[in-house]
Image (tube, rainbow, N blue to C red; front, side):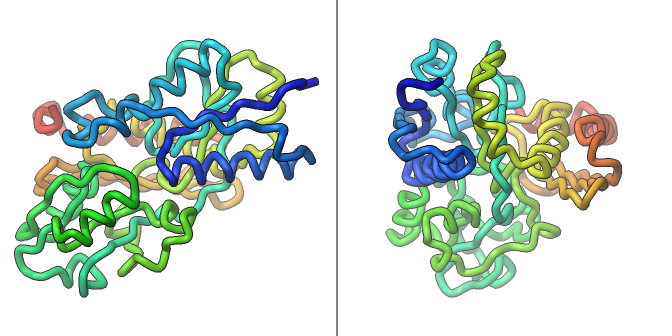
Length: 309
């Protein structure tokens, strides 16, 4: 029996803390535990501290998880809560993704001054986003638009927009909903024309392998359809060696025992695109995603990926 509170690791941003509280509240409900049974431990990560450079220049996605994973590995944390889209496809030895909460809205939200779509942005408008995926998709749709890098929390990026550093920005709609800020969105974008990041909208829980006690706890909130969809998406990403240097998007959707997947890779300027759609059985999610990634890698050829370096 657990005699001290479970220690939940999270990044310091308001959104990350909201996600940690959601995980805690679901665990409380699933196991009839009081709030005192959990302690949320807030850590600063290098990805949060370094705001003046793109992630691709300072090490990629792992910069949002390193400090959390160090304390998870040595036992100072019992588990950590993350945005699935921030998780590298290869985790540190001894750690695994033990649970996925039910996926929220996976779409992107446009926040713009006077525009309700990317097509409506004024000629030569400036869009602020640090995501290479969003940058490439915007450039694909609107080659005339100027893209500038926006980093920081949701609140920081909205403040930059208010300060006139850009005419529009893009954020995950799930994050706005979790922060009770969905009212700031000018529009929520159709994923068929503006596909999301792999894993977007899904909260995951990372813990130590062979920790049966924690695994049993997390199993109470693990959402199987979300886990299955993310297995497909992460396998697709792994086959493409995806990182924060790579404009990749895609979405797996589960319908009973069936799975449908759409994936896309782009050059950073958005001018060259390769897409793939696949359908199959949900129990073969990992294989379907992996084969889709391998097919796109072969179709694009080695020269395509040189622009990602």
